[in-house]
Image (cartoon, rainbow, N blue to C red; front, side, top):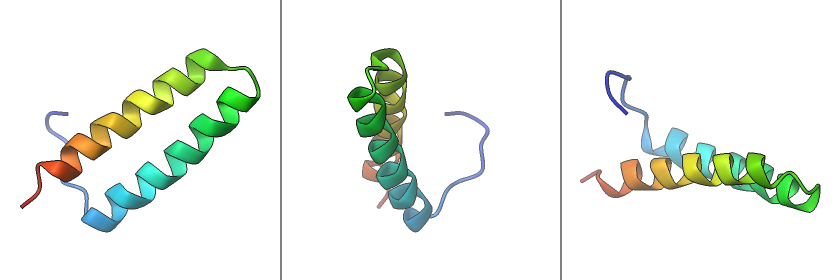
Length: 53
């Protein structure tokens, strides 16, 4: 996650919520590869949020 502009905490939380919903839908539709990619993005956002003071 280099050279990107910092996200606000609200933006990160919104992204986590949206991506989690999309990952759940992908799993229900049998698109496991898509769900795994979305889960990885959620993980990255959670790590970014945890690194905040």
